[in-house]
Image (cartoon, rainbow, N blue to C red):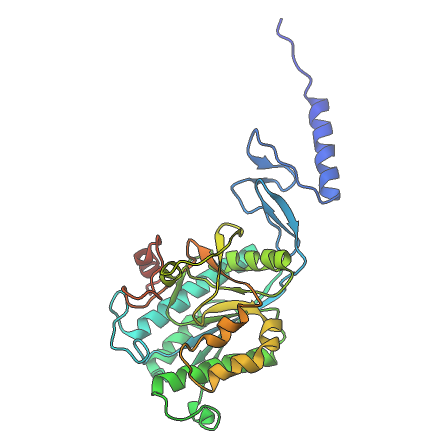
Length: 337
């Protein structure tokens, strides 16, 4: 006769053990079925708990010291310029307004997924606009109204900046500086943990915001200081031979970099500590315009995702544009109206 094993007692003790582990904040792994019984998740799922712990298999967990409770996303739009001070055309060869609309749609998708995944964070989207046609402004507002996320639209009167921005610049540069200056002023006057500054020609992957928030909390804990995260893996990062470091985020690798464009995520505290330096970008254009940011990266880490979380829609031949090993065409098509 086949002997029947009594598994009732084994299962009872297993359940008690799991409850004790949960009580003391320990996570256990059942490698036989590739699951975490304490988290009740497959190991292929996100195991980290936002604001509490970052879990990476097989390296274990990092207890988060910096908990993000709120994020303000500031999208700077201008539908009247193709590529600033250039005659080059962007990838997909469309009018500028189309890049703005698709950027906004992709950003909203990424925010809504982040809202679902990270329910303890307050998300706020602000669009600051300069020189867009009324019909384009109406379209932007329509997309915002349909988004079902907290948002605000600000139309910037660039005449108010004539006494602040040095004269002699092209309309495009003046508009860009006025818009960035407005973004800084918004940050200065708001109560928020994290700011994400975004230009209106970045197509975001759906997991972009979620990954950046998990990564920010983890790396802030590792470095014990405020940092800067980029959404794109720019081609120029591979154009010169320089030392770097590679870190594990939630689902992406992140590499240490020393340069960026002006789409980045950071803390309000870092902005406040460097406000006078960053304010220069809204007053005077010095090539490279991003130089005040690059100075910050000498003391605060700046990281870029590998592979990329967003596509910068510049000219196809630009080293500041389409990142390697990403399906830019799919992102473009998925954010069509």
